[in-house]
Each structure stands twice: as structure tokens, then as C-alpha cells.
Image (cartoon, rainbow, N blue to C red; front, side, top):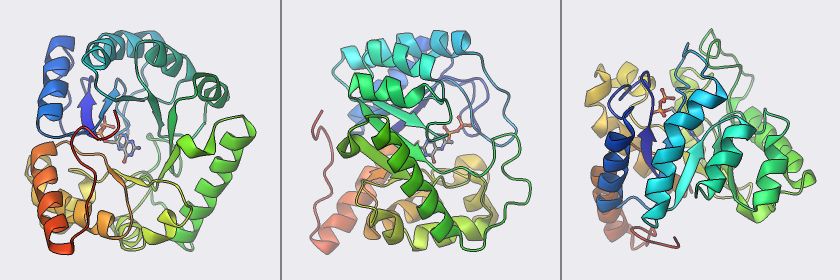
Length: 266
Ligand code: HH2
């Protein structure tokens, strides 16, 4: 899953793809590099990010989704607003990536009605507060329990359980140690029986471990990608698609596994 941030303030590429033409061109590059799907977002969720209104968010993402879906790409919309999700689905998106896991009470109905894919992600707190000393008794058990509950809420609202993916929310209300524990025990999330999405690309904890700035975290991002797939993750949300695809191909060649890549199941 290649990241297309149509935002002025995303933590790693804010402002680079705010112009729709630049975002569309970037999406096409990621597809050419081997992305199986594109995640288009119009609101940054980095710690402390400013909230964006629905009208502004739609103005950012809709032309980009329309163009990329029009090319035949599989597109998810990274939004927590039901209104934005509905418009994005009408514009051609097929998946809603909701980092609040149905925090908007209308979201489940929108997804049930559209029969679209849905990503449910764990976050502790809100982007404004989530990194203020997050604590857990057992991070893996708590994230697992939260996702179990949200899967139930989605199913009760009529969302087809077969269309739902889960995500432990790397960096969303977690310390470095929490992130590492979740990646090391991703099998405990995979055993929920749903495809697991992992988004660790370029995130702060990689900088804390390596001492690298945000633009220099490709090695760390790939290490997480390989560990996550080995533990049972199915979808990697990444900025650097070409290098990640290469790493997966080599890892697959070693293990004899076949991670579905490039053009699978549009
Ligand atoms: N991470 C980010 C945004 N959306 N969605 C899912 N499902 N999982 C993630 O880990 C995830 C996500 C943050 O990354 P990015 O989009 O690059 O930055 P920003 O939120 O600043 O736009």
C-alpha cells in the first residue's frame, strides 16, 4: 500500500504532494514501482497535527482519487470522517482506512452501504495527545482486545467481516518499546483471522533507534516490513514502494513464500 499524502503537514512528506497534479503523478510512480494499492489522505495524523474540516479534506483528496481510480488503481481513502469517506467511495475508492476505527458514528453505515473494504486501526487517545506518556499493562493484549471489539461493532453495523482489515497502529499512542513489542508479536494480531496492515514507514521510533532523520529511515522501515510479513502481516503501508517490493521479493526467494505483489486482485 503506497502512501499518497495530499497534505501540507504530513510528518515525512508534508507539502510535496498538496498540488493534485503532483499527488496524482506520485501515485502513478508508486504503482509503477509495484504498489498493489494506494492510500490517499488529506489530513495528517502526526502527533500534534491540526484538524482539517471535511470540505477542505474532500477538496484535497477527491480529484486525486478520481484520477487514480480512473487509471484502474485500487485506492483506499485515509480518513476518519464518514462524509469524506462517502464522497471518496463515490469518486472511486474501494477501501476506507480509518485510523479511529469507526470513531465517527456514521462511518460503519457508510461502509456497510458501500460494501467497501475497511481498515480498523488502534490508536490510544487522539493525534493531539497520543504521545503524552502512553501506558499499557500489556500492549499486545490491549490492542488485540480493542480490535476484537471494533470488529464486533463493524459486523453489528452490517459491514461484511470478510472485507475488514486490522492494524495495530504503529506510532499512535505508543512508545518505542510498545511499537517493537507489537511488531515482534504481530502473530497475536494476525490470529484474529483478518488481514493485518502495518504502517511503520519512516516513523519516529525508527529515528529513536537509528539516530536517523525522517528522510533517512528506509533501512529501518524495511527491517520492520520484513519482520511484520514474517510474523503474518499482509499489507505494508509504505512511502518507499520500490525498495520495499525488492526487499519482499528477496525475502520471498529465501523462504520460498510468495507474497502477492504487483497488480494482484485490483
Ligand atoms: N499511519 C499514518 C497514517 N495513516 N493508516 C494506517 N492504517 N496505519 C498507519 O500506521 C498509518 C495510517 C501516518 O503516516 P503518514 O500518512 O505518512 O503521516 P501523516 O499522518 O503525518 O500524514
